[in-house]
Image (cartoon, rainbow, N blue to C red; front, top):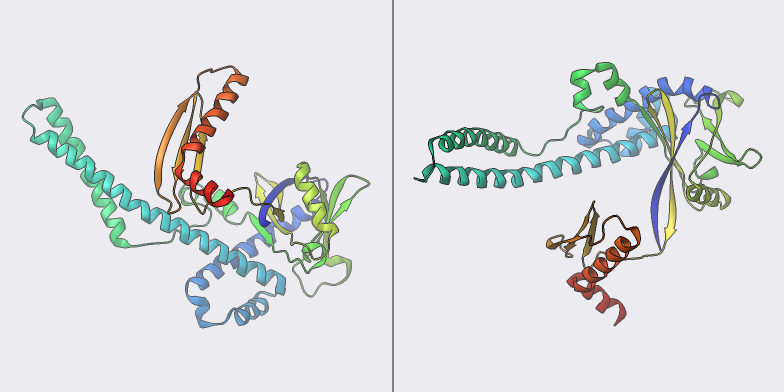
Amino acid sequence: MTSITLVTESKLYVKDNASLYTYFDDYSKLFGFLVRRCVHHLRHQLNGEPESRYRTNLMLEFNVTNRMAKAVIKTAKNQLRLLKESAYYQFKNLYKRKRSLFKKITKLKAILSSNSTSLKQRKLAKLRLFWTQMKLNKVNQLIANGLRLHLTFGTKRLLKTNKAKFLAKRDNQVVYIGDKNETCGNQQFQIHFNSKYNRFDYKLRLENQWVSGSDKYIFGSFVLKNKEAKTDVLKTLSHKKSNPLTVRIIKRDDGLYLQIMYRKETAEVTRSHFGVLGVDFNKGFISVSEINSDGKLRSLTRYTYLHQGKTTKTNLYVSISLSVSCSSSKCWKRYCYRRFS
């Protein structure tokens, strides 16, 4: 059995969550600012401080609770990890782009050196060669600059075109980290099921440690339309200390949306130790790619539908194609041999 993390989303309507709509704008700006600040400090190893001391200083400086400080640091770590992976992926693709441009330049030079090339073709080849070399120079410059993180929160496009939308995009979400040992899997954002109205009610604790009594909570409700997700969330709530429930609130087009991240135990259906088969369904054909355990492409096969427009025959042909593809796959044979021998 393995544990996977799933996400379900529900819209928060104003009539049931008026207090949250009022509270969200100011709090999301503070949360977004602290996350960006923490990302900057994480890039510099928290200025030499241990994480516990940094969290304490964060609480004292901005008058926030320990739970919010933990959520800020964890969100910043996840954000920084995503930025690093994205930058590494883009930097790695620069070398592929360089090889592709070099091949184009070689072909264009061969066309120019050929005696059978007409004057019109020669002019066109010279023009293409010039712009291709310019692109290659730009790629070489980016490679020479090294790996760089893109730290424009809210997208660079909006920063250049619409500052108001950029600011709204930058501070459009808040995260409440869950813990299986806490009440309802999340002490700060507690969810309860209301069987009378067939909905979920929540109790959100305000980020003000000096407020006491009923004033330190915001109440509201929402509905989960995904039946499978609803069942899994109810199962988590019914079993104490089973799994955490992490909550993210996102603002889109003046509306708030609630995302619940929950864990689910599932049996292993397949493994990637011996390779992977990738299937891409398209209109009129399917493409099947075989990737070995090292992540290298071994084969790419295209199967065209014989009976287009007839659902039963098309489904049958797809099943036969996938069966043939699996039986001819080396990684699948290796997996079956290890699994069933």
